[in-house]
Length: 422
Ligand code: AMP
Ligand code: GLY
Image 1 (cartoon, protein in one colour):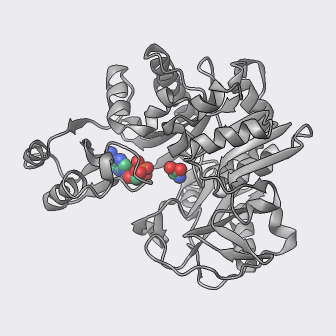
Image 2 (cartoon, helix red, strand yellow):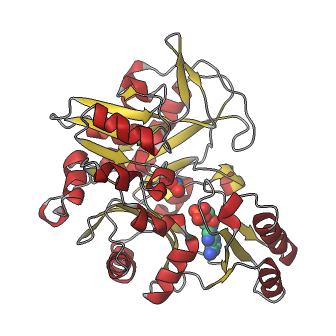
């Protein structure tokens, strides 16, 4: 079987390594992939948003199955375009991907179907938003409606900050058209949990839970990033919480999307906060999380391609999706300076004995050398019987991976360990 994976980060590397385990897979193409992914797939320089050329490539190369991983192509209808040409895909169509593509849509969906989330107001008029902020409870959370590279959320601790955020989104358009509408919502507190799930619109199968570390610096300080590390499972996500989430959030969301004529097929990501008033949805993503995928998929014992095909064929209920009863930790190595400006182009050395456990996010090949080429450069994932050992093992790996200008957080998994120890 010839497989095509759209995307080119650490998440896509993890998906590709897992798909490769299937014996029927003869070739995997990554569009565009990256210098590290090139060890596991044929990388072709077609951008993830270049839908026309993605479809052309798939047809020219007789692709049997496509996985569309990033949010942009999903929201832009990449799955629709591939399916129109008869290519089976993993990922939601554009109608369903709106669950991530528009926060106004997802908030209104949750309100309509009584799915627990932060209270909110939507504004398309800046003056009205500012007027509302004069008396809104502080802290408050301002969210740009559309995709904003994970940066469209501002937690405002003062009224001035909140008003500034509205100005920058609605007037200065720092997130472009994504800021035409803003959601202003209640500030929630509690531990955060990421739950990725497989769903075919009939069944929803949650994967092992995980915990992201979004801030750039230790102790959750510094700027928000795409994610500096993950652990799985998330100790806050007990069996009781899982049961409550299934009843109040996961199934109601799947059913709500069906009722709206927007059946979601693919990986539906629930970003949850376990508040004193129960679990609430912070955000939905229409795709695998990054770097959650780098801890979740290594724990998957079932064959990923088989599970993905079951989602496509709507036969998810008939197969088993099994995860190892172990822990995983992924530490992200970034370029110093990320998420602001940073230097790149430094040669990387990854010891051969740990190469299988490294997921490359930002690197390019030049004269046979692997050079850093992004903010997040790679993630090193370790699996162990205990979380403590998984953390130790992944830091051991990171210490043996060398490139100039490397930066990583030293406390990935610390909060989870403390939660475990009570
Ligand atoms: P997002 O980009 O949607 O993942 O949001 C980034 C981060 O903002 C989340 O991981 C939360 O930590 C935080 N956040 C988003 N919405 C809220 C909220 N209503 N209350 C408190 N924190 C929030
Ligand atoms: N790690 C969060 C995300 O993928 O959006």
